[in-house]
Structure formats: structure tokens, C-alpha cells
Length: 215
Image (tube, rainbow, N blue to C red):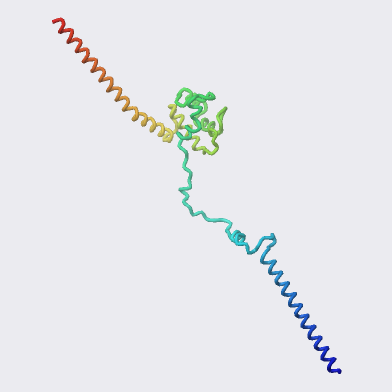
């Protein structure tokens, strides 16, 4: 009888221990699974740790070395004649808003003597009276504006700095105009010579006819 009671107590105790261990194992597994789930899917900002885009973003370096061709990236300055045609000609070719006409030597000479070359450059860059700064195009560099002013002065017969590219451009345009005009001048001279020769022949014929009548 006593042995049966002891055996039952031992069996009960063993089952209790096994049940406790099983329950503890289940709890531990659940806790570990929950922790892994949280750590694998969210960070402190609530964003997935396993997000590939996020990982790539975090691995992206803060700076990069530019190994491109620096020469090809340099923006070429606009030609003064192009800037003039786009922004200046509307006033300086028509005299609009009392703008001095390009090519009017006296108008530009008075302004040149009054303000000097630097003063004219400053007026064009910062604006003056009704003329907006940089002709209304803030994208222009100061150098492009200065070259355009020098181009206008050279077109008006005002000498600017030596070796100024604006003077070279004006000289090239003048040479081109001269080359284009040469055939026209030669054609006119040829027509005049032919006309004179024709008149001389007609006059000679009239004189010959008159002489024959007298005879």
C-alpha cells in the first residue's frame, strides 16, 4: 500500500516537472520567435531592416570623387554678336527708350568720354534707366556682357582695349561684307562699261549717217 502511494507521488511529480518544462519551453520559443520577428522587421523608425532599398541607401557613401572630363563640362561663353541679336538689338537698332543706336559714333563717343569703358560695362551689368541688368538675362556672365558692350562700341567706331575679341569680330564682319559686296560692284562697273560702249557705237553710227547725207 505504502509503495503504491509513493509510486503515485513519484509519477505525479514527474508529470508535473515534465509539464512545467514543456510549458517553459513553449514560452521560451514564443519569446524568441517574437523577438526575432520584431528585430527582423522593424527598427527604431518602424522601417524594415530587410528592406533592400533601405540597406542600399545606408551603404551609399556620403561623397563621390568626380572622375569626369572637366574640360568638356566647362560652359562655352556666348558670342557677343549672338547676345546682341537676342537682347540688345531690339533697342539699340531702333532707338527704343532713347537707347543709343549701334553704329552712331557721336552718341557712343559722348557716353564713352563721360563714363569710360568701365562705366559702360557697369551700366550694362547692373542696369541703367530703362535698361535691365544684363539685358534682362541674369544667366549671362559678367564677361559675356562686357564682350557684348565692347562689340557694340567697336561697331560704333569706338576703340576699346587692345586685342579685344569684339574688335576682331567686327573686323571679320566687315571683311565678309566687303567680300560679298565685291561681285556686286564689279557687276555694276561691267554694266556701266557696256552702256558707255553701246552709246559710243550709236553715236558713231549717227555721225556716219549724217556724213553720208552731206555727201
